[in-house]
Image (cartoon, rainbow, N blue to C red; front, side, top):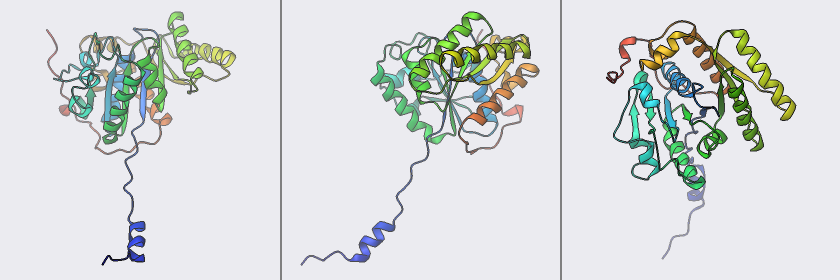
Length: 290
């Protein structure tokens, strides 16, 4: 004889709380249509500053052509984004521990699988990154030059996109091209980062020029996230593979800290789930390549 379900059973089932999945970590996309404007330098240093501030940070090298995050950090691993894109391993197995408690998903210079990926493959790859990102507070993406599918796929999903440019006319023209494409896709305009500015005034003039163009042709203002002035220590840090956020000093580092603060203000509120890193003894890099 079967038992009839008791009313209390249904009530108890209704009151059992459904597990709430963790909120996905917001994405910060560092982009720039023109190559050589300093995207990787900015992405690496922002990720390190966020990690040292106590945020569990994942840095993703999503440049399908010239993945150089590992070069700047002196990092290498048995697996990278290419292996993930080829379906050879999950994202979690490809992560590498970087300095300052930073986690890194390395790219590969001359990537073939990611460079040839279609939109469905890119979507699947980014979904896998989003699942792994639940263990982090923020994800920083370094993207490739130009307006390729991989860059736009990240920018469309990012809570904040920083468009990197220099004061050069060609770089500014390409910065506007990025604004135009994202605007056409219904996304907010990227916030401008003026790199290698000779002075604060030059950075402000550069930002005003882009703002005038976006207001005229896109009917949208262009916001300035910050600027990084010309500083020999910035170039030296890139050449020596010693990120300024770990070993630097001077105006370049102060500018990067200001950009990081502006990015934090523009992102959704982040949880801080680890202690800040302030002791230089905790920072370790691999030996520089000979």
